[in-house]
Picture 1 (cartoon, rainbow, N blue to C red):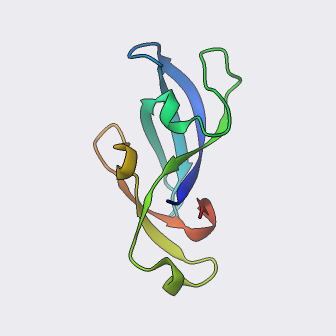
Picture 2 (cartoon, rainbow, N blue to C red; picture 1 turned 30 degrees about the vertical axis):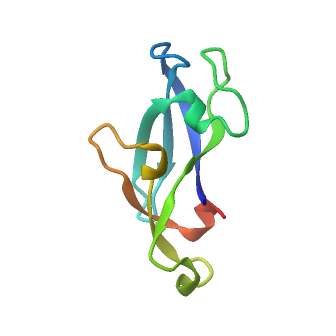
Picture 3 (cartoon, helix red, strand yellow; picture 1 turned 135 degrees about the horizontal axis):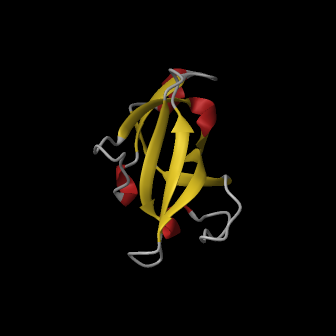
Amino acid sequence: MPELRCEAVRWVDDEPFPGIVEVQFVDAAGQRWSLIDKSSIFAQFAELTPESVYPVKVTVACEVQGDIGAMGVGGVVTVSTSPDGVTTPDGRDTFAVNQSQLIP
């Protein structure tokens, strides 16, 4: 499953366990988005704690909508962050991002 490159920017709360972090990324149009969820969802590269030095590079699992192979190098793809139930604070989980932002 592909992963979207992001940055954890801050520790939000200790509850519920294991804690909540805010993660951000910039979409293909240059808009910054925030995802707030459990630290363990984003902690593929390093454990996230209140004492972590932010920002920290992280990823979030995503599903590519459509055929990524048809986009060509450097294309824009639509992804959903729904595999782990991750959304923006207003419930959005679908974004147009640069293909280079994905880890296959």
